[in-house]
Length: 142
Image 1 (spheres, one colour):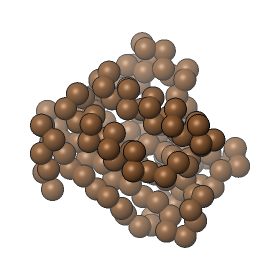
Image 2 (tube, helix red, strand yellow):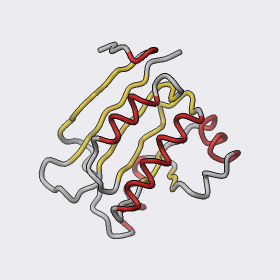
Image 3 (cartoon, rainbow, N blue to C red):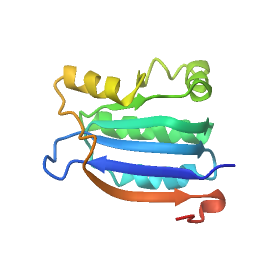
């Protein structure tokens, strides 16, 4: 199993800007709680989840994504999944969640989707905030 790595990039200047969260590794029953904790700490604003480094997406991971989407929707914010690899995309398709979750081919495409809808695009090179490297059993690997 690979470690789950989560990195958040947000704008220190505009509180209304979207946030970019990069997720890499396996999102499974052991790593989902750490991911949930990280995502719960985010402000309720448009969010991009760069999933290009995700190697496994389990039911526990789907629950985390849906909970985030529901929370953001209540705040009139959106979640866009960017760069979802084929195995994770298959899970989303088989479960029918590809119709419920907004997906884009890349972070650039996700930014364009949010910008076209009137949202403030997330900065791509700014302040890096919490980074957690969580391995099996929730142990830190940083």
